[in-house]
Image: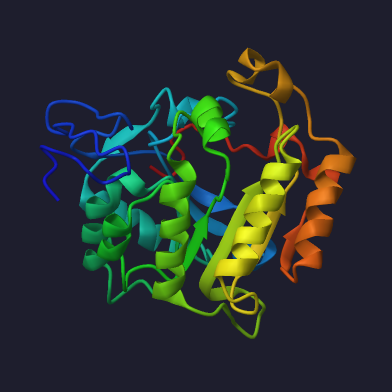
Length: 295
């Protein structure tokens, strides 16, 4: 990949990363806002010890309700070398993390691969690719053999909603192809004797206010296009109005119990399995402090 004409994400903005950030705000060096044990992922990822989470700065999406907007949109973080990134991976492993969890990694894939190469004989825990789902198949293919667990969002089926709330009307077109490529690479979900996830695909979907019909379309697509016994679903209820969500009255409120339960019922009726949150999970105190911890 030529960082002087970046095409890592579906926007293919062609930015010269050596001269400044692209649409994602990613420059020529890795930028990280936090690297620490995180206990609020799904149970087979967090476990008792926590997930070794590395939060990358910047993002290819522009979600108006992003809880991590300080790092995704404002690009808060610290530039580090590839070698330092590889050291962070080993430090998290030494802290007994169950996995290395790469959050919003898309725009730094070549750097991440280089860091993983540096520790390939020392890193023994699974590597998780935690993404908003807005990926290209070409970039994902670069990761084949490096990633053990894919943890993508599948946010929208409707292109109008994706354009309105995340400035990506082509979201589902890109994300659906990406999810299929992820499954091709990692195959069936594998759990260890301790119940921790070792390999596989875990698809997240956040139910939005007024979006239950769009959510149902997502559930139906998953059930029709992926082996239901091989993948897991995480159906999230924690939508909280924040950042710029007040611009859109229809999503400037929490999700109702009826809205969330109707999506859960549809997922269950389709035979999808995984993790369905209680409505009490819709709290903003699960957002970590982006204070350069571990960087």
